[in-house]
Structures are given as C-alpha cells and as structure tokens.
Image 1 (cartoon, rainbow, N blue to C red):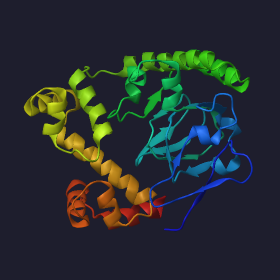
Image 2: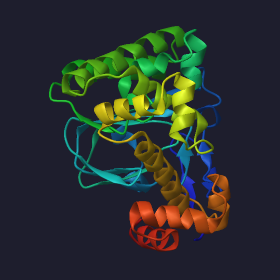
Image 3: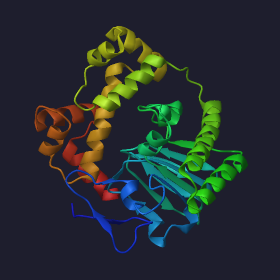
Length: 303
C-alpha cells in the first residue's frame, strides 16, 4: 500500500501527515497549538474544503468528536460500519476510531473536537467523560437522530461563537458540558437497555488492558466477582458472553491495523499480543470467516 498524505483543515501551510507502520495519531494540541485553547475545536461543516466532500481517514484521533449534520445527505463509515447522513444526524466518535465519509449534497452543521486533556484540565474527576454513556468504552453506538434540533443547535452555535472569540477556557468547558448534557438527554430517551455497573466497569477495564489481557477471569478478578457472574451480567446487558465481547474488540483492532496500516501480518500479531502470525490468522478466520490477507485486500479495494 502506498503512503497516503492527509490534508487537515485548520493547518497552516502545506503540512501533511503520511501513513506509517502504526497508524498516525492526530492530536488537537498539535494542530491548533497556537490557539488559546488548543484542546477544543469547533467548526462549521459547510466551511470544509471541497476535498473533504469525499474523505477517507488513514489516521487515528486522540480526541472525542461530535459531527452534527443539520442539513445534508451521504454516508459516514466509522470502524467499518456505514451510517446514513441525513438532516438531524449526530455522530459520536471516541479516541482511536477511524472514519470516512461521502457527501451526496451540500451539508450544514457543526464539528466539535476535544481531547481528554480538556476535561482533565477543568475537572478533578478522572472519569468525568464516562458520565456520558455514548463515550464509555465498549459502547458501539455512534449515530443518533435528533428530531428536535433547535435547542442543541442553539447550544452548539453559542459554543462555536465563544470558541471563535477565544473566550476563557472555563466558559468553553461549561458550554461543552451543556452540549453534552443535551445530547445525553436525547440519548437517554432512546436508550432502553438497563444499566449494569459491572458491565460498564468491565468495558472500561477492557479498553485499559487491551490487547494484553483477553481472559474473562482476569476482568472478573479485577471487578471482585466470579467469571460466571460477569458472564451473566454481559449476557443481560449486551446479549453476548464476556468472551465474545473481548473477541469482538480484538477483531476490531485487527481490522483497523489491517486496513489502516502498512504493518505485516507478523507485525500486527506482535502488536496485538498473539503468540505468532499463524495463531492470529486462525483466530481472525474463526471470528470473521476470512483470512487477514484476504480481508485487507478486499477492504482496500473499496476504500
């Protein structure tokens, strides 16, 4: 695969990022290092350059992102799942995710990007972002439809203006909280699954310890419960066994590396803590019905 350069909006001059062995991580603090608050960026989707009508990311982000399409149509692919873009669609991305989109009409809306450091600087609570269920590890829901957009649009527009005016970081943080709380309110109205503390903690631990720990027993011990109890909680909350959730997360990481890096199969196996490439290939084939090599070739044909 040839090295690809990616133009990032907001960069001055001709700065580009080249794809590397391990996917390049884009940091807000590097892109907007001269801004008063480099850990938060708010922009209007209609100001994207024409080259972003069809955009394919070959890098990961270290930040959270919200894309709110007030108007427009097209498709948005997030970690190999394709979603429809239509009026009132909201997309929620977590650090590490890779995405691409295609616009079929002119779009209007907002993009909000903020790093975990933005929250760390403004609240003493280490896990404050996990107050918002859509940002919790393990939550795969990436799209919402906002039927009554006026309130959320107004809140984001205020945040956009204050960010453009380089307002105090404390005010920007408060306005960001307001936006997230409004999204949480809409999210809660659509969320019908019961909460389960053990499963939430398990998903957080999985992100922290992945890919080096793939045993359900490890996570059960960390939570202070038995493996069967954790398995039962996972089945109740997610409709999956604990092991299948771990395998699902492993497959996602393998897919990311296969498609968005130039690492060899052996290098990917080492990166994801498999004993060797043969073991990784057997695991991948069992989970997907495809070999890593064939999957890489097939997906790259359509990206």
